[in-house]
Amino acid sequence: MDILLIIIWIVIFVVWYYYVKIKRRYDEFDGYGIPYVGLFEGWKNMFNLITLKESFIDLIDKNYFKHKDQQIVPSFDLSQRALMLRDAELVKQITIKDFDFFVNHDRNFNEEIDKLMGKMLVVMVDDEWRNMRNVLSPIFTSSKMKMMFGILSDCASDFIEHYEEKAKNGEKVIIDCKETFSRFTVDGICSAVLGFKGDCVKNENSELFKFTTTLQTPTFKDNMKTLLFAFARKLYVLLKLQLTKKEVYDFFYNAIVKVMKEREQSGIFRPDVIQLLMQAKKGQLEVQDKEHEVNEAELSNFSANIEYDVKAKNTKLTNWTDEHYMAQGFIFFAAGFDTTQLLLQVTSLCLTRNKEVQEKLIEEVDEVVASLDEGQVTYEALHKMKYLDMVISEALRFWPPAILTTRQCERDYTLKLNHGKNLKLEKGDMLTIPIYAMHHDPKYFEDPEKFDPERFSDERKGSIVDGSYVPFGYGPRVCIGSRFALMEAKLLLFNILRKFTFEVCDKTPEKLEMAKKIGQFVFVDPVVVELKPRN
Ligand code: HEM
Image (cartoon, rainbow, N blue to C red; front, side, top):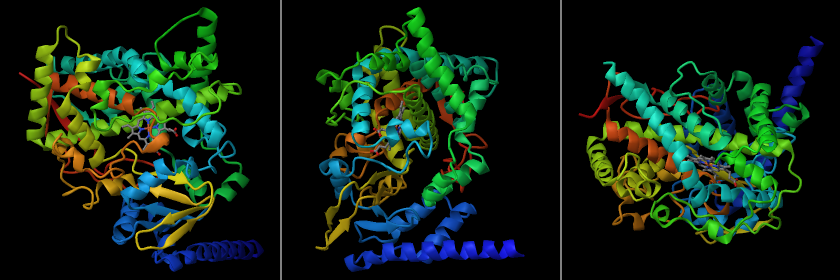
């Protein structure tokens, strides 16, 4: 009984503490004419998320579309003051013009939260991030992408060979796009980043693939940890929790630290990211201005990003530990395979459901095939394919694999709002850029629920408002792997459409809808399509 009473009092105290704390925090917005989400609504949203009544996208969209006339709206967060941008001009201002005030995603995600993930580029802060980004960005320049093109071409050929074989045996080739494309992107990342053949496409019982699915499917315990981290960070740190599982830590230790040591001892060279990390370790991967130049063909691609000068003070790695290398391998792996498989899933369903788009794309593929001297498509030819680029750009608008990104305010900052008021942002305030919601805002994209690659045609792309289309983020902190992802996705689609068409089967869903699951980006109905051999 005594214990029950104590628990009740602790619960009452915690609820009261957060009530007062958050109410005070959000009351301040009243003076700026900004409607706030309301405490009751905030708690209700959190409850709906935990009890799987609403998906993460539902919650963001609700907040985004409720306040149509606002440029910025508060969002509910127990740990800090949080706001959501709903204006392309503000996105540009925060991510580019005043980047120095908003360098980081979230400085609270650090080594205390997780000793491995806390060292990833994506969570690094300030000068440590600048130095690391400066050292890593040459890995993703045009010259290095060309080096990896052959590796990814081989993975795409393996994929086609595997499914052609099935078709030859008279089997109907029905694919579950999530699993099929995850197998391909894991193979791509293993070959290009970690330097070994994953073989997940061909080996249906691959242990490696089973391992990677654990990264895609967090357990209940993982979700509870993530929620605690998201909403009550101090408690998370107090409990000394860690997000990385032991088997994941061990995998990256063996795949990176051990392999680097072996290569150093035996003098093996492979054209992959591990090799580039080894060069970085020795200070041989210094930034050369020319390396930042984007290949001309790539620049004509709509979603391609340029690298910004991040004003790093130090271009050599002096204090990297083994865990720093593991962490970069981990983020390239985790960010690389799941996002690109999602892009491929979305594109496949959109092509299946939009026959005229698929036919037009096949025409372009056939034209390129006819112009090739040898069998394989070249890096240049792939990047010159205009319609393929329009289709991929639209798929990234339609269903961006990263539904949001964040920036944290580092110094007091005054935001001038359209209605003449100045909103004071304080150090620690968290800003959300709701990528998915902006891509579906009719203010920026007419008839947003229509899959329409023509938005990105030469005639129309000029009317896209700068800052409203940000599938890879924006500014100096933009996705470092965007060129790799675009190249990988385009390469596979090219190879598929050369031999197959995407067709509707019994299980093909009408549309995409995000499932109500915490920490997972999965669709309610799996994307299942038929790959029908051409001819
Ligand atoms: C379709 C595929 C992908 C999408 C949509 C995507 C999207 C994003 C977005 C939205 C961000 C945040 C950018 C910002 O806040 O401005 C990001 C960051 C990042 N992405 Fe990607 N990404 C993709 C593929 C990849 C790949 C293939 C890699 C690595 C091989 C990668 C590595 C990273 C890293 C390391 C960061 C952190 C960059 C930094 O903080 O400096 N991503 N990505």
